[in-house]
Amino acid sequence: MKRFFTALAITSTLFITQACASQVNSSETPDSNASTVSNANSHADHNMEGSKTPEAKENSHGGHNMEGSHNEHSDHSKLEPAIATAKLTLPTKITPNTPVPIAIEVKDKNGKAIANFDKFQEELMHLIVVSDDLQSFNHIHPIYKGNGRFEVQANFPHPGGYTLFSDYKVAGKAEQVSVLKAQVPGKSPAAPTIDLATTKTFGNTKANLKLSQPTLKAGQEVHVIFNLQDAVSNQPPKDLKPYLGERGHLVILKQSSPLTQVDYIHAHAMKNTPTGEVHFITHFPKPGKYKIWGQFNRNGKIITADFWVDVQ
Image (cartoon, rainbow, N blue to C red; front, top):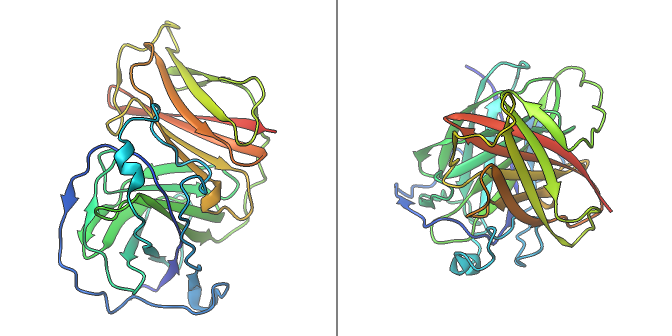
């Protein structure tokens, strides 16, 4: 029988706009196999538990910003928090660059499995898996199995620590993010050089990053603009299609150790922007280096464009 370890997430309640939600139902039978660990810093038996720290203020979370136009779906931003927690289960031994099964169980503050979730951006859960050095990034969507349990295959490209940001929405509640941790044995690769270039090519797509301010200041609202071109023709791509119901998807993480929920920013794309351009509005809560991942759909192929920015 395979051995598994679990990690209980640090959970932050976030207020955010999203598309109109659809509900999924299942039974609400508590999961009697859920483990509890009393010491938040103990790694004995591969168990890790984080304290539950609900954040009630809308701006307490670095980004998790309103969709481009601040007036769109404003009613969703006033939803009350669910104060849920998530527990990660994955194999004890993880081999780099080999997909492994993982499970995430979402429970309420009393430890009872949560059964009902709302979709946002076309999915019930968005799972962002990043290495702690921010070299690797993966955006996947666990499948809901009922009774608060989500399952998916995840790939960890190289040895080292990983942080998993589990983004979900308990039915009728505000969207929230649980932060989970995983460790892949072996020697971690050397930290990458931070490249502040604003033009890069990703496969068949050239991406130009434009910012509304020449110098980014912590706390100031900023427009993050991706100008996309076909790498061959240098013209705006004619095959750009919606991704997860929007013109693009944006995740930003502050370079930090350890990564926590306050380092995570998720912004929604603005509508009605020029051809070949995808716009987001966000703000960077603290000075430091941040990595940006914009994701776009070119006729079914997802392009992930990553950039570093320096915030003063």
